[in-house]
Length: 258
Image 1 (cartoon, rainbow, N blue to C red):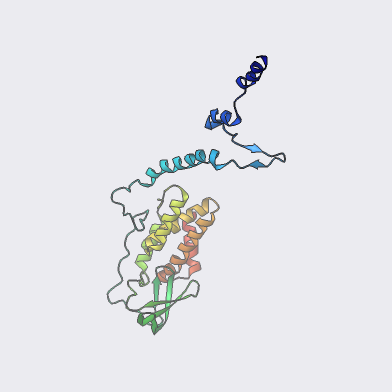
Image 2: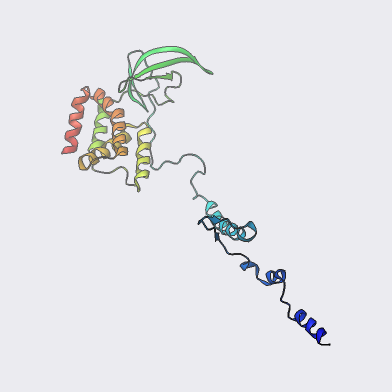
C-alpha cells in the first residue's frame, strides 16, 4: 500500500510540458524584437514575428499622402502645357512685303542681329525649298531658316531709330519688371521675357540686371540673364541708332550710373 501512494505522488506533481508553456504565452511576446550575436552583429528577425508591423507603418503614410496628389488645379489654368508667369505681349508681325536678300540684316528671336549670307535651295527631311542662311553677328554661328515660314519663325527687320528710342526709354524707367519670390520663379519669368522676342521685354531684363550689377555682385544666374539680354539687344540698338556698339555701351553705362 505504501508503494502505490509513493508512485502516484510524482504523477500529480508533474509540471506542464514545454509545448504547453509556449502556447500559453501571448503571440506579441514570443521573441524579442532584436537579438545580437556575441560579436555584436544583429540577427534579422523572422518574418513571422516582425514583418507585419513595419509593413503597416509604411502603407499608412502612403495612404495618407494619396489625397494630396488628387488636388484639382484652379479653374482657368490649363492642365497641360506651359503656363507663363508673366503676361507677355505678342510681338508685332513683320510687314507683309518683308523679304530678305543676300547682305541684308535681320533679327532672329533667339540669337539677335544676323546677316543673310546666302539663299539656298535645300532638302532637309520632308522639307524642301529655299532657306535663308543667317550669320549671327554676336558669335558667327550659321542658322538656316525656311524662307516661306520666316515670319512664323520670328524673323523680323531691324528696329527703326524711333523704336530704338522707345526701347532706351524703357531702360531708363525706375520700375522693376519682376518681383516674384523666390529667385527660381524670378529667373523663370526673366527667361520667358527674353525668349518672347519683344525688344521691350528684353530691355526690361537688361534694365533690372544692370541695376543689380551696380548694387551688388551678380550671381551666376543673374550674369547669365545680363549676357543674354545684351547679346540680343545691344547690337540691334547700335545698328538702329547708327553708332558702334562700344559707343552705345558707354551711353547705357552712363544712363544707369546717373
